[in-house]
Length: 156
Image (cartoon, rainbow, N blue to C red; front, side, top):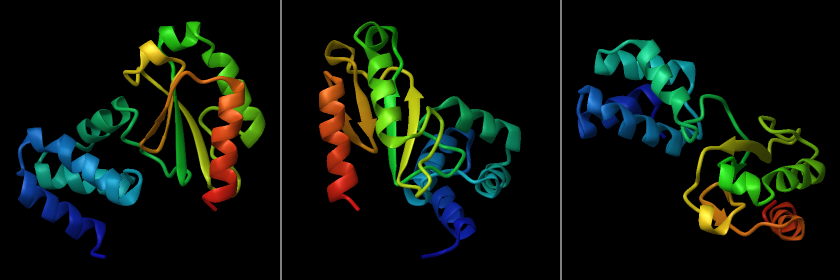
């Protein structure tokens, strides 16, 4: 696998070196590396000839562009008002109790990270969460226990 610097250069050749290329480049870096390191953001800024602050500002604005290493399974719980009204806090409490982590933390073995994120687009079936790219809706504490036990047991 080539270095991050080489990878970013390839992405800039593919997507261009204009400001509009920033998002697809950042998304591809996250897809490959799971997060955006400070060095990667600086490299993108240099190649696109924009400030590092602009790159970091963009990355930190979008919750799916992680700027720190996360666990193998990123659990993102929707924090929209609809999911909140449908029991999101009970869902978070259940996840925290099972995994022994709080929102924003990663489990000791690095397997799970628990995050809140803005609307996932599943308000009609809330509360909702994503584990990596897998959507789970109409959550209950029992459903959470079943889903997480599968990740804990079968996906070691």
